[in-house]
Length: 260
Image (cartoon, one colour):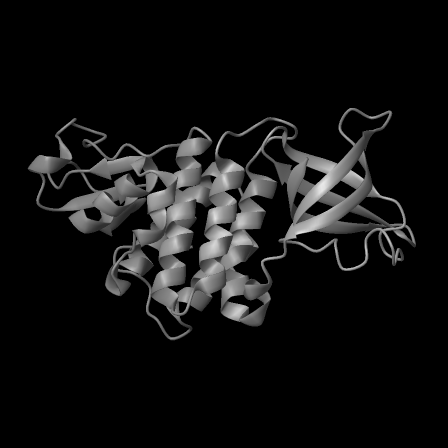
């Protein structure tokens, strides 16, 4: 079984607990006996972000597996060659860890994560990496059942095609200019809404060509980050770090963005 390593935790003096994400069973927890010290079975294998081919064995607990052996299928080494890429990859691992239930298959989620990590490995500028993260955030919402309504105003039902200006709300979609404003809304150019819709609907193999203008990335990432915090119900540290890195430390907050 293939699994993406999301997190490692120490257990005692020599063992490791792994949180991994798989296609067939979703998020799983595995125990690597001697994982800290083994120089034969696990040396250089057990690292967050590695895609592993795993041999898992059942234990007495239905929620815990034993990792018998593993080999690296994809190391995503390119992420570790640039700290900005590594920071951008953080939300991919953290959201699979914190926003998915244990041992519940999530169709398409692993494939989306791997495609995002592969794009980030090659990312040469913040716009490319930011677009990859925004696509992941938008598409994972849809895969997990939290999809945004991007076709019509949430309040009055007016189609997006009839609106000249739009707002995105943490209530889950777009709001037209005629409906009352709220503090939980972000300004959104029509191009940004089209980008989010394309991120949800395009064929996976075509997503690598989808890219936002640099001027719209702070709006996209700011809204998606706030929406994901609403979904999971608490802060997401890796997401905050990734956004600060991609926006640049001196970048000003997006206009009309809610402050926390």
